[in-house]
Amino acid sequence: MNDKEYEKIIKAICNTNRKDIIVLLKNAKTEMCVNHISKDLEMSQSLTSQQLKYLEARDIVYGYRVGKTTCYKLCSNDITKKVIKIINILN
Image: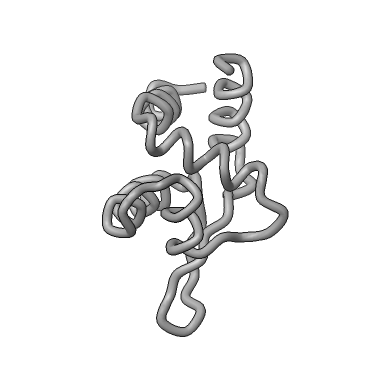
């Protein structure tokens, strides 16, 4: 792993809201829309969207439009797998 990958992982999980989103998406049976994520985590929709965009910019989650809303799922790449592995170790 290079320094950029380490930085992505650390920044993704150092924020409790982002970590909670990753765990929720990991445990979800399918993708989840922003409004469901914000409701399940008791966060505002604005904060949820902001954190999801942060994770999407770092290739940890993938978002796509369904009508007027955006749904998200975890990416299936090495970075996401490493993030999940570290979260599992920390929990």
